[in-house]
Length: 190
Image (cartoon, rainbow, N blue to C red):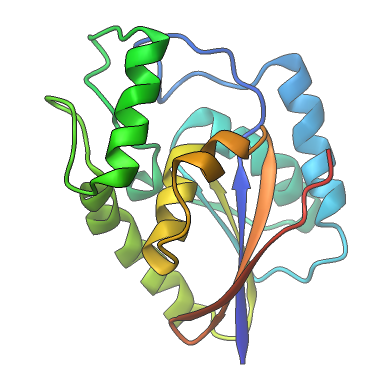
């Protein structure tokens, strides 16, 4: 029995330092969230899960409404805390930290999370979903960095270059036989 997890990376959300949890989607992002629901309209869904961050929830909300499925929020699925919100990083420092973290799973900036830290909090939720919904299709509203780290847990080839190539929104399907990853496929068309 194949279980499919549809990882839906959130749509466009203007960055505001210090507002990671509460920042929502832009107008363009809200329109893209409607398109996410359209792309998944023919997929029989068993459940919808999400990070507890507003932009991830808002991206799967139109799908939730059309399918009459509750969005089950888990803080463990939130985006990786690269650095404390009170600290500003230059774009170059931000990118260099992400590159380094994907090469060394234990690397983190002071006060931030490593890839290994994220695996410790997020993978038990993925395991729970796989166990609870055997043979079903599940949607998870997520973020680019943690989405890449989840994929990396199951397939080491995913890293910085993949993360950099993703769009907002984006949709990847991870197909599992029990807890074993069979394949990953992108279904979002820009």
